[in-house]
Length: 278
Image 1 (tube, helix red, strand yellow):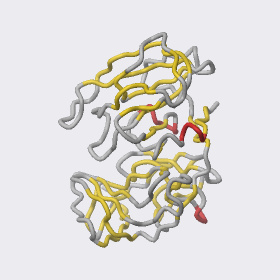
Image 2: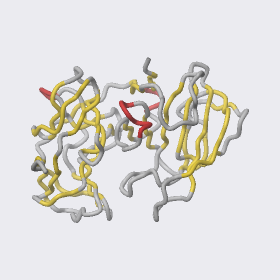
Image 3: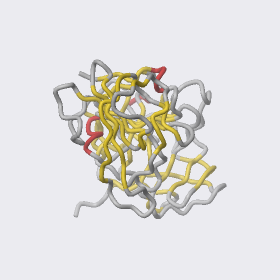
C-alpha cells in the first residue's frame, strides 16, 4: 500500500523527485527526495523521533564524511529521513515544518545534485535500518506536464550541469510542473535519463512509451520506466544525461555530467541516440 505525501507537505519544498537516484531505496518510487530552500531541513512528517544514527556514506571529495538517519514514528508508519544532521533526539516530538537539523551534502549524491531530504516509510514490523524495503510513495499533488521541443538557451551553469530556459514554468510558485513524457503529453518524466537504470512517468495512465521531446526514451510498466540503452547529446556532444523532477518555482531542462561544457547564453539542442549493440 502506497503512502501519500500531502500537498501541504510538498509545498514546503521547491522540488521533489521519486526516481532521480541510483540507490535501491528509490526502486519503484519507494522514496521521495524533497528539496528545501536554505540550509535547514523542515520536517515532512509529524510524530515521535525514535532514533538517530550516523551512517557510512560513499567517500566523495565534495561530500561530508558521514550521513545520518532519523527515524520518526508517525503513528501509521515509521518514516526514514536521510541527509540531515540531527537537531532532534529520540523522544522528541516533531510537527510538519519543524526544524530537523542542517542539511548534509552526502556521498550518496552525484556532484550535480543539490542538498535535499530523503524520505521513505516502513511498516512497524519492518526493519527501518535497511536501505531497501520501504513502501511506495505517492505525491499528493497534480503535476502539470510541460511540452518541450528539445531546444533552449542556457540560463544557469555549474561545473557539472547546465539549466535551459525551456520549457518555461507557466506560473512560478503556484503549482508543480514537470517535463511531459507520456503518449499524448500525459504524465511527467522523473529520474536520471539515462544515467540511472530506471525512471518514472508520474500522473499518466500507467504503462506505455516514455518520450523526451517526442523521441522514445523507454517503456513504462505502471509508473516505473526502464530507460532504453541510449546516449543524451547536447549540440551533438554527449552528456551524462538529463535530471528530471517536479518543480514548483522554475522549470527548464537540466543537463548533467562531468563533461558538460555549456556557457550561459548558449543555444542548445538536445537529442537522444540509441547505442549500437556491443
